[in-house]
Length: 256
Image (cartoon, rainbow, N blue to C red; front, side):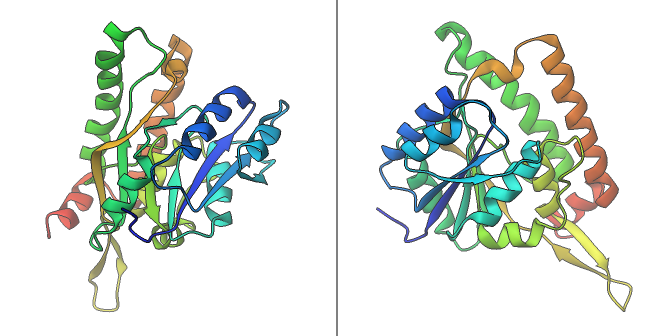
């Protein structure tokens, strides 16, 4: 059953034509068709743009390299009520868009984030390694943020959430764009008003374990990749805490 929400799907891509082709095939087979698919070509030298057009997507170029820039360009280009996000190597389950619509049909929910497995690992390793990876991301980031963080391989938000956050995200810093966006919209006090008080700023994000998109394990393969991801995560947290540290965010989350 459709929620009536128009769901735009943003996919940043850089030289990833084969993975993108499969992602678009799975989007075309969704139980509830997305309103549009926007592929942001971040300077590819392969045929990613051609694959995107053949898969029914609208291609938006973003020559400035980096996922934060590419994602922001995609969100700005969307026409839907809901801005969903996948990576080129995401493999959304058939009910992915339906789950987004059902979750955001609740007016008290502003955004939703999900999970997935590393589809290219052997079966005995697929679940434990995926759980370890997502647990290492979700649990400490949830504690730092005061609510569920975004996972860029499977997430969605109302258009208003992005409009609130677009001037607060860090497009030129070495950050995880999904985590940085979560800090921008997560619970925090705003600047003091004329009475010396803080207003509360908070877009409510919920974690939906049924919002599933499997991904490639390449992002966690190799020591250098792990170091890069942890360093980028630490920088994202540092910037987020400069805006509002964890204790302030939880104070807002728990009603002060």
